[in-house]
Image (cartoon, rainbow over all chains, first blue to last red; front, side, top):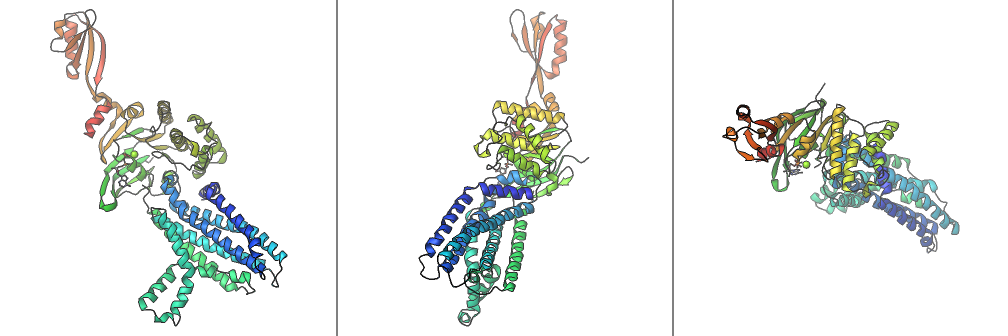
Length: 264
Length: 300
Ligand SMILES: Nc1ncnc2c1ncn2[C@@H]1O[C@H](COP(=O)(O)OP(=O)(O)O)[C@@H](O)[C@H]1O
Ligand SMILES: [Mg+2]
């Protein structure tokens, strides 16, 4: 397991995509103090908001590119013949792929997060806010965001286990991300009184999608990081448990599919 | 001890798009003895790679079963004592040759010191020392093929499954691979390799199986095939009366020499006639169907 895991790490590190992405994210983060200075008041809040959004965006691109292409690249370039004929079982292979991608999501979040902390500090010192900076909450928010993308990566891998093209896992991941981000709102709308006016079929469909597609809203702790809204420990526990259960299911299904896959 | 390879009634049907079915393998049964070099000979598209991919657990058979050293091919353990060279191998090209061997060694749970020593050994054997620390991306096709063989040799397994090991190599590389296969045999290892070139089989194999359109059409020892392929003899004779060779075609050679073609069955009778007439046998050469002709006959 560790052998395959470190192999995948090496692959990602030597991949130009990662290098390009890290460079791009550094440029983005350096823009934070500049952009936030345009705001008359609340430049600190703006800096936090911008940083969190940039981190989220970079992680999203990272997850989409890696999560949905790593397996596809192995199959497309016929590396699977040489790797899966070694004494690994397919479950180990899939888990190693996921762990490598997840590792880079968290490592990337940590790295960009530290840079962002510096950018936020610069903005805060230059233009102090009446609100204290909540470093702990910012960290929690970034961590939860990373969990969200790790979950998305697991789903990207799941789709790659049964698709033969690059497009299918990539756009599935995009679709899952969009619908997963909106699903909480849609669900609340459907169950609200105004939603009752919709016909039953639409309401049932929305409900089904809500239960299948992950609810990414559960991982959103941005408001707590920016404004003095207290963190709810229960909400954190809920999000982590949700991540564990959902990811386990997605990966189990991925292993099941991939074990049946013909590598021709 | 369990046989290195035991295949029973293996069939594989590919279902392509538009419902096209390809029977790539039909009811193949075959067992490979420990220590033998087995040539799996067949024209392109015969089902050689399909068989090998099934053995390595890359694809699943439609029917039948197979074991490697008595272990079901569906388990990862079955591959522990096997060195496999895929057809036109693709190896992770972001690694260097040496790193790739390190990865393979760790997969087979080799100790770090062993990996290093054996890597040096196989890199030297396949003449890849100079390229060892370059990324595989920069290798030529033949170099990748040789590294593919090096990674199969690395953990010194008991069984080698090689899919067209000589393809993509220059004559020197081919000779090298044949030498390696011979030395594996000397060390008691079992080799199962596929090829479409009869000369390769003649050069190194103990036994050959001929597969055509997914069916095993012949299975025999190479020695027996070569012997049974003898059709007759060319005999050079000097002295004696030419008429005594009567009934046999001959062409005159320099001096009073003659060269006869004698079918296998009448060889003894011919020798009697010639010696009775005072002729002297100078040279006998066997005329045989070679494996190529045998192969072509089966394929037709
Ligand atoms: N994935 C596949 N889908 C459909 N047909 C296939 C597939 N792979 C191989 N075949 C067919 O199976 C037959 C055997 O192929 P193969 O085992 O690769 O032959 P070879 O003896 O040259 O290695 C060929 O007719 C080939 O077209
Ligand atoms: Mg082939």
